Amino acid sequence: MGRIIGIDLGTTNSLAAVWQDGKSTLIPNAFGEYLTPSVVSIGEGGTVYVGKTAKERLSSHPQQSASVFKRFMGTPRKYKLGDRTYLPEELSAFVLRKLKEDAENYLGEPVSEAVVSVPAYFNDMARNGTKRAGVLAGLKVERIINEPSAAALACQNRNQEEDAKMLVFDFGGGTLDVSLVECFDNVIEILAVSGDNRLGGRDFDGELADYFIRLADIDDASLTPQTREIIRKSAEACKKALTEEKTAEMTVNCPQLRKKVEISRKDLVKMCALLFERMTKPVRQVLTDSRTPVDQIDHIVLVGGSSKMPVVQQYLKHILGRTDMETMEPDHMIALGCGVCAGIMERDEEVKDVLLTDICPFSLGVGVMNYQEQDRSLMSFIIERNTPLPVSREQTYVTAHDYQTAMCFEIYQGEEMYAENNIYLGEISFDIPIEKKGEVACFVRFTYDINGVLEVQVRIPSMDEVKKLVIVNEGLGMTQEEIEEKLKELEKVKVNPAKEEENLFVLEWGQRLFAQCVQEEIRNDIVKKMQYFRYVMSHDVYHVPRVRKYTTVFFAYVEGILNSFLVFPDGASGDGGWYEEMDDEEKEIDSLFNEWNEDKED
Image 1 (cartoon, rainbow, N blue to C red):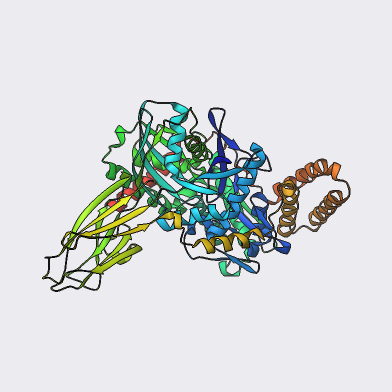
Image 2: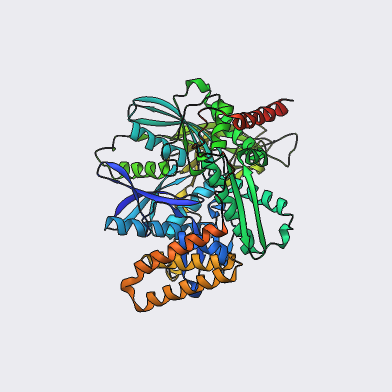
């Protein structure tokens, strides 16, 4: 049997960890880095590129590349890359397979199983899609762990506190999760969760890109896919620069567009006002659901790469009225927590007694008769959201009409009043004794466990009859034959060998810079460097590392010419931007937050 690893399958980046030598340890990829971009690209001959090389190809080969597919996990959305189409879970499977290979190279032994994290607010379809991705990657995924739960597990393992209540604000590239977690003895209990699966750092990139396009006075529809990706990449770099400095320049230098725009954090706050407002809802929801005042929370823990943004931290301080926020390795905490969970599953002596409880993130129930609008069933909740797992609950229902001959219970997941607006999971129907309205009663029991298995049991005492329906993630929405067929299909796909990863990344980087550049002299130099590097790769393998290093230095220099992001006005200084004391600009930003709140109250 192989090892178990923990995987943070992220929207922007993914990474893996393993429990080793009494601690959770991050696993490096082929570049010696921990973060692997969650990007897939199809090259010549159908070769699949995953990670850093694929991310470079987003600009040079946008029609053959895909990113941010995690947001659509479990949906029928398809991505056309070259002459083939892929579902989000199939693209995620390539990322998982790459992480599995990196782990096996690092550990020197097979990896057979993984604990994979998902946003707490992922519904069952998205969770099923994640498990399906694991199967297609050749991994057994018995345990799905909520991302804030993993972060809390990592925090508790590091701090070793006996009793603490923490609010975990997990803001990544594509999703936002907020959880309230209580730690006591060896128990980590999730009290409440909420979130937004369509809100993340990528949305800030989008707002910056749109702002830049408006200032450039160019028709968005006229932009080529290559130019659009260059603008988005420039926006991402500008956002990162604003994490370190208060003012940055966003520069786009490509054949279709050449422009430089100075942007401040205050500008970012103004253009992203709606995004900040969306952050407020899940924070308030968690505090309301758990009935916990802010002053009773011991720690406010920020995880996820996007939580490093000073404007995000300042907004949280504003709405919570607290300044004591912890940012311990926000890019790594979820993966480290998954590594701890992997150690628990391997029954390691150091952590085997740690108990991690979880909750049901969405309500579960059945559709019932709506006498006011008979064509629209109402939702009758049996298991409310934020109920600790495992749980078993029962409700009693009676016939809605005289002389009914059958009853049908449609099962839904969600919070909406009308059943049809929630997610349909399945149904149970059967014949019943013919009686007057309300005289035939039945008991409906929902039993839901920590692995996402929902068992529905319907019992009619007068008939001494019981019917069951098991809605289980293990089925993954595919038959065993379909899984085997899909595995064979994906096995035929040629995945780029890890040993060639660094060389191919440099070549893709050069192609992207060539396409972006408009200066003939620089273009000629890029071509010469790439031609020489290709020659060395083919004829002088021994000198490849040295030539690759020199080529990389040259490309970094060209990148700096094309994208002068870190150009600041006189007097601006890099103070880390953590807002320990508010200066004039920070006070202006805080006053903006006050104006938003006053407008909403009015």
